[in-house]
Image 1 (tube, rainbow, N blue to C red):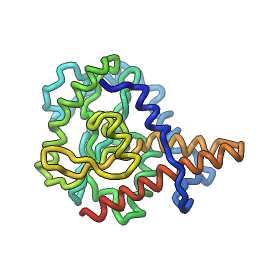
Image 2: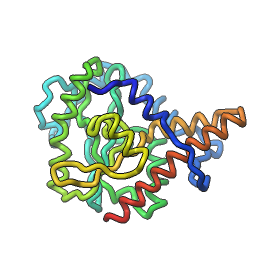
Image 3: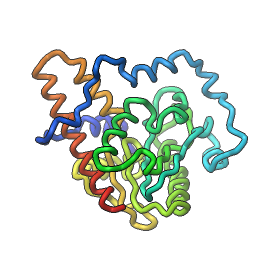
Length: 257
C-alpha cells in the first residue's frame, strides 16, 4: 500500500544543483494566476460539482464502467498532440470532490500550465506537440482508502494502454501523483532524483517521472513572498534544482522523438 506521508516527503526531497537562474519565474506585479484560478472556484457548491452533466458524445473514460464507485468522468481527460509523447498528470486525492478544471487548464491550474509552457519552450517543444492525459480519468469521493485508490489506478491503467496503442506513443512522462501510483513511492522517488526512465509495460516504453508542477508553482509563490534573504536563497536553490532536473528530462525526451 502507498503511505501518504511518503508523498509529502517526496515533494520536499530536492537536491541543490548549480546552474543558471534564468528559468526562475518572477512575477512583474501582476496577480498570481494560480490564486485567480482558485478564487474562481471557491464559491462553487459541492453538489453542483457532483451532479455535473456528462456530455452526450461520450469519451472513452465516460464509457468506462470499471469503477462503479466513481462520481463522474473528467470532462477533458485527454488532449491529442503531434508527437508520440504522452504526459500523464493528475492531482493527489483531496478531501471532497475537486472541481473539474480540465476545460481551462492542461495541468489543473494556470500557474502549472505556465511552468510547463516555459519548460517546453526551452527544449523546442510546442504545447500542442505532446499528448496530455489525466490520471485518474474520473473523479471520486476521496474518502476512499489506500486500497481503493490503488484499485482505481490499476483499473484506469487500461486507458493509458489504449492511448499508447491508438496513437503509437513512444515515450511517457508522468508528473507528480501518476508517477507515484504507477511506480510506487520508492521507484518514483529514485527515477525523479536521477532523471533516468523506468519502463512501462507492455512495450518497455521509456517512462520518465517529474515532480508535481503544482508543488513547484507553490514553491515559486513561497519564494516570491519570502522576505528573509537566507530563506529566499534556500528556496531559490531548491527551485533551481527541480527546474534543472526537469529541463534535463525534457531534453532526453526531445532526443528520443
